[in-house]
Length: 401
Ligand SMILES: Cc1cc2nc3c(=O)[nH]c(=O)nc-3n(C[C@H](O)[C@H](O)[C@H](O)COP(=O)(O)OP(=O)(O)OC[C@H]3O[C@@H](n4cnc5c(N)ncnc54)[C@H](O)[C@@H]3O)c2cc1C
Image (cartoon, rainbow, N blue to C red; front, side):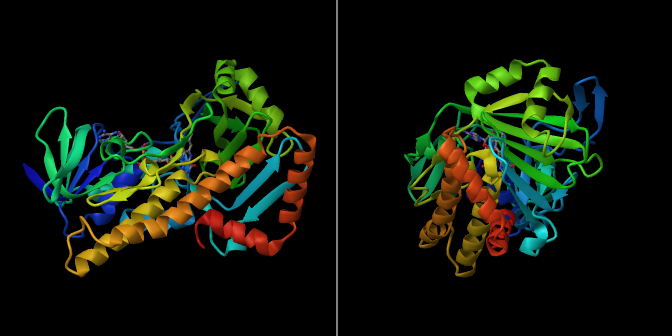
């Protein structure tokens, strides 16, 4: 049976970045996923036919904050089509207040970058090209448990392998988490997210916007510097509402979005194909055990309204790599030890805090009670008038705190 120092379950953005960051550590690494990550190169060209848009913008894009981008540049390179945003604007459709945050407030060149997920995977795959320490295994993990001093990872087809440490980066439905008996706390209130690309009648001017609409939060992300009138959107709402929005004809959908954003952002001229994803929100209180740790969505999946999910995953990876390298320097194998506790102490408070803030915003802005609408608009006005508070929020959003 092959023996590895580290087995990484899942080659999503968390697992891939972990493998890339550990590639020069001297550890032997097995990266396991049934779907092989690939390198893709693409243009972001919009072609319009009436209210229908055929853009080549992939449906899944992420707001990668400045801190995560610095991390990606250290372990790989700047992803293709990373469109910087220097401003964030938040407003309530049921009120007249708004808040804006600028990169200059946080003393950074950009608050973050809007990047297609495939472009991030591509630079990580490239960084792993030719790395002899990391081997990719195209398998689905079907069992994971202790065997003597090691962890035994089994597959439906093919020989199992042994590893000193298994890192579960296999997403919100983590098989590793289940197999080793770690139980997540879950919140499922039937929410889903609609994603697509829009063509607007004006430039987004490098501003990432969040409108709290009557049905749920709508994010408009400037996805291309070459085409600043293209917005990638994430609209979260109850699943039945998302079904309704998916069923609208393109011109009706453009009108529905225009109705929410016209005063702040402009008119929607055309929309691309729409996709939806169920929203999972969960946190696993116990995310380490001897020989196993969880990272990324396997440990915590949060509401996408603040665009923080994968940023938390990258921060998990940064910490894991720092602690594992320190263990190696001290002459210890990474499978066990006090560092697991240090990982929990470092990551749990931060991950819980971010998830709680996202839930609080989602709850507060999901209310149609006039008194609450008045109070939240007042709160926004007050926040927008306090430069020191705005600086703190801008620093939090950029990850540079
Ligand atoms: C609509 C939407 C918009 C979002 N926007 C943002 C944003 O703007 N900014 C941001 O920071 N975050 C955002 N997020 C969150 C972000 O997408 C996730 O946090 C991130 O993709 C999680 O990455 P991951 O690698 O941890 O998990 P995943 O991407 O789920 O990857 C898990 C991997 O594990 C593999 N796997 C699963 N089971 C097994 C098994 N049994 N054996 C082996 N492999 C397995 C899967 O094939 C997959 O490749 C958004 C989420 C949604 C739904």
